[in-house]
Each structure stands twice: as structure tokens, then as C-alpha cells.
Image (cartoon, rainbow, N blue to C red; front, side, top):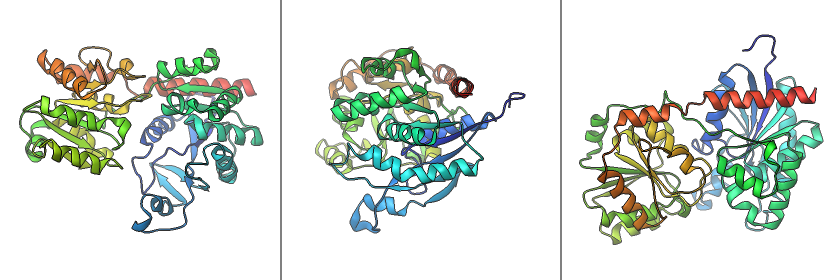
Length: 399
């Protein structure tokens, strides 16, 4: 810890945070916070609200998972409180920030008391989380820093009321962080003052994501020939279906898909229809700790998303020595910026995927050492230092 400087006391506030039932949900928020706290200059307690749902059991589908999430848990030395808030499906978008703020206020107050005070509320995702945090901040007289992460800028502001609420929250916030320059530009276009926005991209854990025994993993998985991997929730915007549709144009390639979600049945049907059962494998959701082996076993990662603020999977794969293929959207060009990092698609389509794969493999593939070296420049150190500087500036300004 820096001499003569007291640690900054945060309350981290977000609905995007892992829990015992969904251990990979919002893991990027947890990773950033863990590195921040590890600096010794910050302490934090986490308030991670989850929707209220009273029933348990498989007949209630994914909603029943909310009931299984514990009210309290310890994760990596951090205390996490999961208060419940009322989420009204389909019709509740406009009232969710207020309901979230009212439900979480006692938990935030308890967190402040438990750590002997708070200097800043550190909110992740602008809507509803950031808006709710600014409501709580005004009630408690605390400054709020909001981090924009993707669809909270690229999608939600298309709706008039949330857009107005995001603008108001941005005016109230003591600081705003975006995880890519593209998201900052989009916020400025919404009317947020550029000088109030700090770009702090996500980093990659270079100790976890590193080259491993590639051949041993490939042997265990029964892989031979060039292998592609796609990692992410099985939803339409992640574009797994486009990669599957591209596979008939890529003979000899194997595709691994790690993730689970509502599109699984559709993806299985596509695989069967295209006769790809011997070349495309759905691996299901994989623990974060297993991903380095999977990345390392592949020859290239493909991310065919339609929206991404800063896609962590790109750097994770690169840190394991695996180049990436990505759509030319939002933060992706900021990550895939040199040949050793990979290649960008010219269009988001099955043809675009196939052309990019052929382009990457048709040229000389970057060495795995070069790709790892490129990713090494994206450690968490600069992001952690940037947060500390911003937080200390806000605390000093307030005093």
C-alpha cells in the first residue's frame, strides 16, 4: 500500500457477479475487483442483488436458480451479499432501477457499517445497476462511479426512458469508466461529456491463462487436424450458429463450443441438419479454470458476436497462445489490432466466418509464442492503477 494513504473503501454494486449457482455470471467484474483489492490500496464489500423468485425445482426452469442463490457468501476473500429485488418480466424495464435501489439500500448500508464506512459506490453496468446506484448514492451522500460494459450502451439506450435515465445517472455520477474506446464514443454520442469518461479496458489473468501441454490436451479430447473454439453463452447474439453454418465450407476443421444457454436445442438441430456431428462438439458450460486447456488445444478462437463491449475471451485465448477471429464491432478492433493477435471478419455471416478462417490459416499462422507475447501487454496492472487514480481523485475532490 502507498505510504500514508488509507485504503479506499468501496461498496461494489452490481447484478453482474458470480455466485454459488452461477459461478461464471459476471466473472469479469469479479476478476477486475480481485486485482484491485490485491493492490492493497482498496477494500470492498460486494452487494450483488438477484431477482426475487419464491419457488424451487426444475419445473420452474431457470427462474428457480434465483431461489437457490445464497443470501451471503464468501468468494476469494470478498464478502458478497445477494439481496432480493422485484423483477417484473417484460413490463418492468422502466421501474427496475427504482425497485432495485429500494431493495438493495439496506444491504448497501449494512456493507458500509461492516467496513467502517465507504468512500465510493463502485457500480457495474449502467442500466439498471448504475441508475440504481446513483439513487442510493444521493440518499446516502456517497459519490458513484459507473462502469459501462457493452449492451448497456449499445442496446438499452435505444429505448427512450432507459436512455433518459442513463443520461441523468451519468450527470450525477462522480466518474464513468468504459471498457473500450468505442463505448466511450457511443456515450459521448448520447450526450455524456467526454472529459468525465475514463477508458480502462479489461485485462487478462496471465497466471491462469497461459500455454499448457497442448498435445496432451488434444490427445485427451481426441482432436486431430485444425481445431476452432467458440466460447460463450448459447444465445443468438454470440453467433455460435453462424460458425456452425460456416463449417461445411471448412472441411477438415473441428469446432468446439463451450457454453450453455437457451439456444442449445437449436444449435443441436443445426449440427444434425448439416451432418456435422463428427466435427462439431457442444461441450456445455465449462468452469473458468478449465478454459486454458481448451483454448490451448485449439488453433484459433472464433467470436462471432453482434455486440461486445470488451470481449474477455479474445485475450484469454491469446494469453494461451491461440489467435482469435472476431467480428469488427465495438471493442474487438482494439483487441485484435496486430497480425499476431488474429484477424477480423469482413462481415458477420457464415461466409464471413469461413472467409476469415481461410484467411488466417491461408497465411502463415502467428506463432503461439508471438500471440502470447501480444496478450502479455494486457495485464490487469494498468487497469488497476487507473481505477486507483480515479478513485483517489474523487475522494480528494470530495474532501
